[in-house]
Length: 156
Image 1 (cartoon, rainbow, N blue to C red):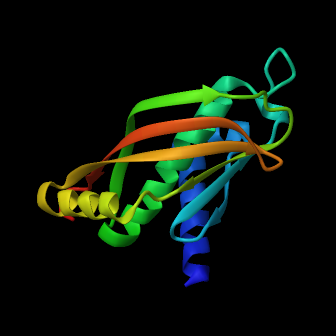
Image 2: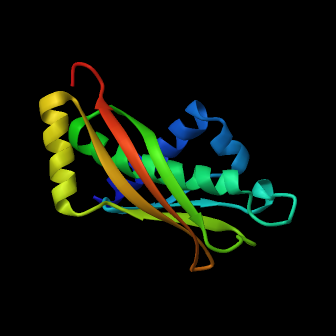
């Protein structure tokens, strides 16, 4: 099972680099996926701002894509190909990022997941809210909340 999860994350990483070239330029990489939680990492060097700290746009991109990847992996494992898009987000920059950083997100409570699956099954689309924490060396630096729309590919 663990090998299947790692393979799915590796394939999604490749898809990200092919479909969203920015991810390769800023060095985003899924480093962990266990079926319930995901970690996506980024190096500081290509993401520096004029102050020598992490560029807010790169940090927001990491947080947004970590949530996107988590939902994509989870939904595609259960319902097949799907389009996931963020439609609302809020971000709190609590402290500067001064080294390599990573985003950590977990699936929400079971009720929200069941509601998403029921909506996908009945309408072919649904919504899910996620929280993402961006950390540097285990210290929380940024907190992100995102609302994502999910649509199954036609014929699924």
